[in-house]
Image (tube, rainbow, N blue to C red):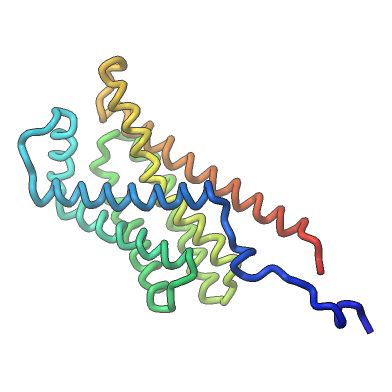
Length: 226
């Protein structure tokens, strides 16, 4: 008789194996809050425009107002996707919410391509959108395919990747804030730094997610077998 049959071996629970580090969770929630705040601010600007604003802000609001319907069709599904992502990643989403998660993700990605036609940062911003939006949709499609195959662990990996990429739009906001704050010295305007901010913000999120997923896989490979 094996010793393992006599002595119960404590195995890691599902919650402990899926536990994320505090810095990752903090970054995730910060990105979620920023994303929702950005959407609410943009919707208010579209619905209730006010004439008294700083010059650069007024110019940005005017640019988005020129294609208000497309902007709304992009940011509303994006906000819903972010909210659904919270439930999906926390394991609190049923089948119906998961279907909505993939549906609104696809809508967000599709309208992002259309929004790139009005890129404030010109071809630099447009190139960032095309690269990262394509990677987002590819990751989301892979997760959806794995979902229907019943491969939950790999589906979760690709879901994390897709959500991390999309939340890069939140990381661009502090980067843009730095450019706005230093514009008096640099004399850069949004059309000059928006594209750079997009590349920086999306790259930060993509790299962090890939490094964490890689470290997680390595930890699983080196975990002692009981």
